[in-house]
Each structure stands twice: as structure tokens, then as C-alpha cells.
Image (cartoon, rainbow, N blue to C red):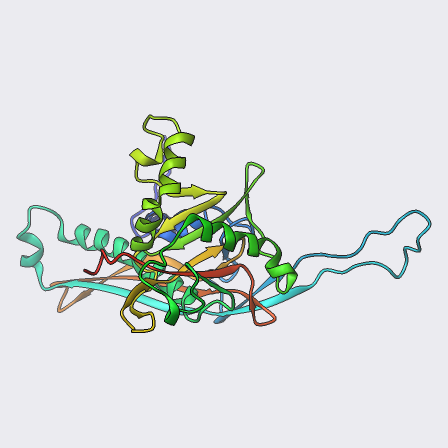
Length: 334
């Protein structure tokens, strides 16, 4: 009887190992697991895999803006009145990243009742996912969006007061502007479509999410509009959805303590995003390499990947990101 056997060192075994590592990192990453569940344009995070494993260090991603040609009526001339799509190219530069662990010797590995090597790999998967997230957050927050709204009556971070907290009214106000791009002064932000419904994504620091959750309008609507069981967001740790804005929190959103006229107001950035707000391109998906040192008495593990991340722009204007900055109740860094 014949059996199919894949040896430990077989290329297929290595490929399976790398796929497992990538899948694990994917599940642990905020951006990869929640914002890019599948390839395609109907995501906050657009993912390009065309460079995965290929040569080169730059990736070009093409986006298409709103098509706004006027309709022609009966008897109107048709030829010469055709519209055209306006694509633009957004360039990304790949970056190589490594996260490393190494244990001292064979005795160090033998002392624990658990596998030190396996623990290293598990720790690297978790930290590796964090590093991927950090890279994408850095790209998101490298500069302020060209359009930023502020809580309350503030017009800048210097005019924020401690009471200018994040509110549902500001969420809806910002979304309203996004739907037309400020009466088409810039690209209207396309929503993510889910089961025929349009959604935008809000992303805020944990303290800002707390302020929004404490808002009386949110509390009353949540009590009255949802059932009383386990599916009610009051009773479970789940993203908030308000006016078709799915609100997330994350500690990598930047926070500050120097807002206001006296530079003493705690505040944080926040973002509302639509389809294609962020873009990434893989040069090499995550894998873990194992290396030995000192006559194989020491073992090191290297979580490594090659990735480009950026916030797409069109004519120097953000494609699908709007800022919403607000004062915050100081909880996380008190």
C-alpha cells in the first residue's frame, strides 16, 4: 500500500508552517482580522498581495474616484459626450521587519516543564501581530488628515476644553460631511457595504470610547433599541454601532495631555474611515525562522515579514479618512 508522506524538511511542510504562522498573526492583529476580512475594495483596509514573494521594493495601487458624467436624454447627441473614469496611483514602499527571541543554552530550555521553544514562537506570534498593527497605525497617524473635525465648539486642539468630549452628534456630523466630501470639494468617502447596508468605521482611543459609551443618548438608545439579553451591547464587550458607524477602540490611537489654551487638556485623535481608507501590500507574509548558535547550544527565533502600509491620497487629499479629535476623560494614563 502506498502512502503520501511529507517529510519534515519538505517545501510543502515549510509552506504549511508559514501559512499557519500567517493565519495566527492574522487572527491576533486588529487591522488584519477586523478591517480586512477578505481581499477586495469593500474593506477599510485594502490588501494587495501581488508583490508577495516577488522582487522589487515598491508597490503601486490604483484607485478610481467618483464617476460623475451627466446623463443624456432622448434626441441628445451621444458621441463626444462620454464620461471617463479617473484612476490614480498610490505608491507604497516595502519595509522589512524582524522580531527576535533567543535562549541561552540547552539547560535553559530543559529547566521549564513546558517547551521554551514553543513559548518563544507563541510570544513571537503575539508580538509580531502587534508590530504589524503598529506599522499600520504609524502610517495612519504619520500626518493629520487634511479634514479634521473637533468635539464641542473647538476648531483646533489648542481650543479644546475638558468638556469637549466625543459625542454621537459629532460622529453623525462627521459622517454627513464624508458622504459628499464637503459637497464634493474632495472625494466623497465610499462606505463599506454589508448586506446592502452602508457602514463607516470609527476608530478612537480607549478613553474616548469610554466617553462616548457614557453619553446619555447612547445609553438610552442602547437600552431601548436592543433586546435585554446577551446580544445587547450593554452586556457584552462589542463594538458600538451608531447611525451605521461601527466604532472601535485601540490603545495605538495617539493620545495627548497638552491640548487647550493652557496646554493642560487631555485629548486624543480619532478617525472616521470608509472604503480604502488604508492600504497595505505584502512583500513577504509573516514566517518564523529558527537558527542555532554556539555549536547548536543556543536557539533563536525570528518572526519576520515584508510589508508596505500607507494612507491613500488623491490630489494631496485623503481618499477615505477624516479626523475627529476630542478631549478625553483621563483614565488609561492617570
